[in-house]
Length: 73
Image (cartoon, rainbow, N blue to C red; front, top):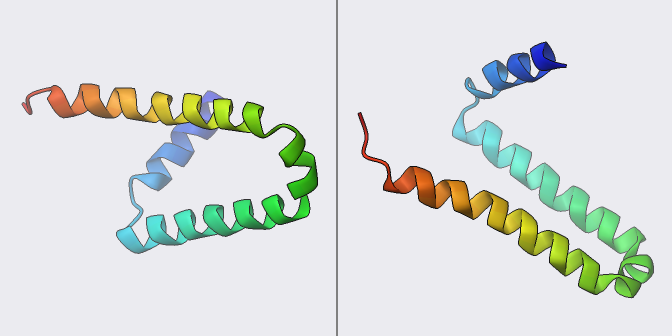
């Protein structure tokens, strides 16, 4: 499993801006598609979905702030 992750990370390091943009667009529209199919299911658990979304957002923002504050070497 570790080798798989290392291989993926090495591949991602070679991505261009266009590759990242297409990846994000793919994720966005996949989420919209899943949301449209399961909208009635998720409306029952909208509070739980918001909690997970906020936790995920915090897990992304905290390292970003930490890395932004570090001086470059």
